[in-house]
Length: 271
Length: 248
Image (cartoon, rainbow over all chains, first blue to last red; front, side, top):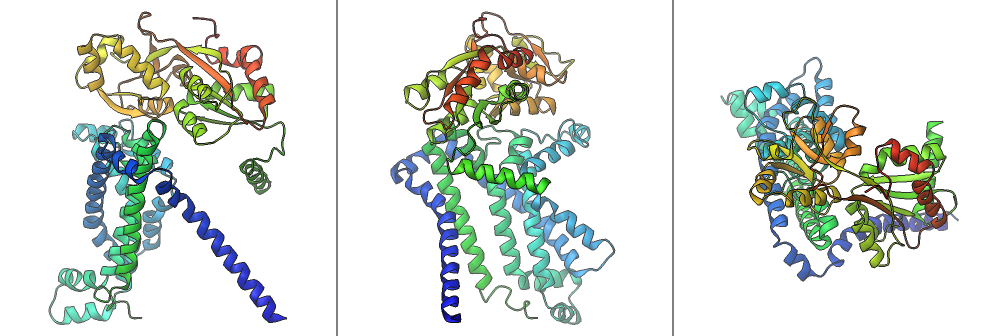
């Protein structure tokens, strides 16, 4: 009977979803249940843990600021102009998305390390990146920027060109149309890109360790501290992990909420 | 061909994950990062089918405490295997090699003595606390006058999770010097040079291995250790610059 077959199929689908859900959530739940909440909270008071969280906050914000200031106009250009090699540019920009973090670390060293292509030039300019907080920001920007650029480009592409045209006929220059029409219309897509980029930056490990090293308060971000505490103090590693899970979940939730918010970006997304 | 090999690899990993000792010959070894060249050469020359994972000894110990069960645990010190033994997680540790802690510098470095490291503005990479190479380093610095050791520690720019991290920072020119084992310097093939430490300050670096309790292949693990004491393993260790266990 086709009905029986359909219901068997339905059961198979439900089993697959159940397996996927259990597999993906059990490890996350385990972070919170493996140690008592009191122990988690007291671990958060440890200097190494606090320094790591504070450093992660500062470096990810700095990276995001760079990404937004440079990335927003760059994404706008890619979204609104047609030129030769545009697809190639887009692909090159997206490449770090799929690079393994260790490759990103090696690549950054090869480019900006003391023995790298620009190493001598940076040294002459008095700019120190390797083993410095600035190096962490460089690594985070490198791995997280493509997430923002991609989302922002897609969001700008979805803005109705007639709106920009209307702004211009009303006397707004292109720069003004970008600031007052394009950015508000693409707001939800841009915010989603920002949240994704922040999530990626917050979780960065390999490139940071290889390019910036690991030193408490200077370059040891939360993921690096988790790795360092893993062998010394497992509850502290769990506590840091719990914080990162909570922040990541909040980010994901905010992306979903913003995407639904009618006051941001609903206008431009009409086909 | 490659897809077939990949599938076989996935299948064997899956078998491992299920704790299925389908392949009786296979040996899973968790060893200190500094043992990599010697152990790889040993498995190759003795034709041992070994899955070897190299990391910081402390990292491997933490994994064993979390229930990961390689057949053999080989650490860059004796303290970690002793601790795990006391906790009933591994069998009696056997010392199978010795090494020397040295100061590694790039060729042509101005640094040729421990005291040079106190100069302000130098950049150093050392092992993190709890990592054997980091603990040995702190032991050496502890033997210096406190103002000198504090000045040296003030120059530390990175606390690395294992020796490969220190060697990488050195070969990339990110730091001026770092403490690693003599064998690590040898592995770089001239990219780094070793500055010997004063004999009185030199810590005794002994490597101990222990069969993990509940291992799938304890027999293979015991044979592997026997080979490290006398045979292909011992040869590979000497070749890589490790000293014999009684050589201190």
